[in-house]
Image (cartoon, rainbow, N blue to C red; front, side):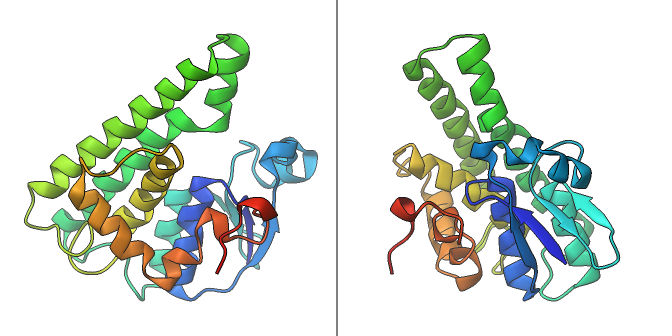
Length: 220
């Protein structure tokens, strides 16, 4: 399979984690968003939405949208499972994942930042305030849910990583990039650190990718 990715893409980060957890090899095709490579004809043919990531199976089947890709991988390669076995557990994990992937993350993506800059002419301080507001709002909501549910364990749901953790670590990574102190959200912080200690998560981090700019690469 081919996996179309960009080092800084949080959606790509999610799928990288899932591929690592499943032990699935993939040929990585790097699509440089900063150079508008996602808008080029070659990638537009893969995904007309011109968004990352995309996954192309050996038979030509093309998948897009990170959560859909991850659930597909979970169904076709069920071990280890990324969703709980029970319906309520699956609903909870999906809800936590969607809080990040469909509410928090979309407000921070490059096309929104470009609109704030080019169309609304917001100053950098205003744009930074926008990013910080939506980042911390999501962190606070996650903390409240995790703190008040006995289903929370070492990870967001129980004691093994799920789709919820895959989504949450990307959002926390963004918070750290903004130099946001995680002390107000101790459960989020603990779960993030627990997850990122796993090789499957650590190897997927944006700063540890082959296409990460050399100056930003994680030093071992």
